Length: 248
Image (cartoon, rainbow, N blue to C red; front, top):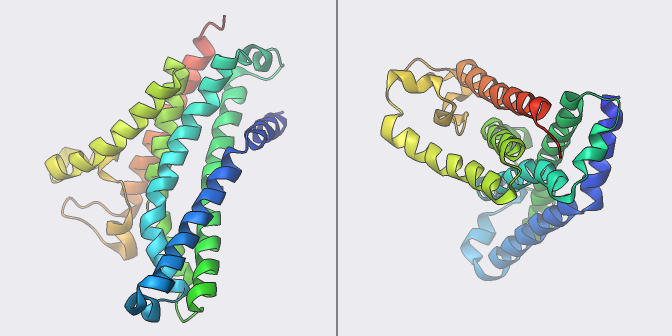
């Protein structure tokens, strides 16, 4: 039953072509960047290759992809309430939790797919404009992956906000506010002992790569555990609220 619900959500998301348009937007943007470097930045063009271009895009594109994740996390829920189609979903024999989680999983899969598109497209564009060169694509993928857990957390927050408020604008705003506040959090109280138990400290897991430990004794596994637990808390809150919500 869950797979059927997931397939239904996936078909609905694809019918709106949001993922397609966003992925095309990413490809065009990266292609434009590559073309500008090739034509107008001669020094950088001579030193650039596919691996270097992938590394550059890996620094620039994740923030844009994160914004996309926040939007789809909020929209996949709020659109059902806005269009009045939520009642049709709840007529089915599946539980409310299954219905909601099928939406959540579909949003995460589409979000992660954009990373795949970004990696493949940026490497291909770099190879066309600058040649392949030498390097390790695995290292670049690892660097990209360090920011994905926190981005999924933001998606989950906007998803939960959508369940609680049914307002698209407010849900997106909450996700973006937390993202902005997380940067301030690290600067203001990132060195406090208690801060290591707050997910806002772990916007990227890169500082904990290769077994590194920070001044508070935090390693990769601790940071990842806090992030996963925080994601689970917001996912559970959204389920509890959705199960008890009156659908008019």
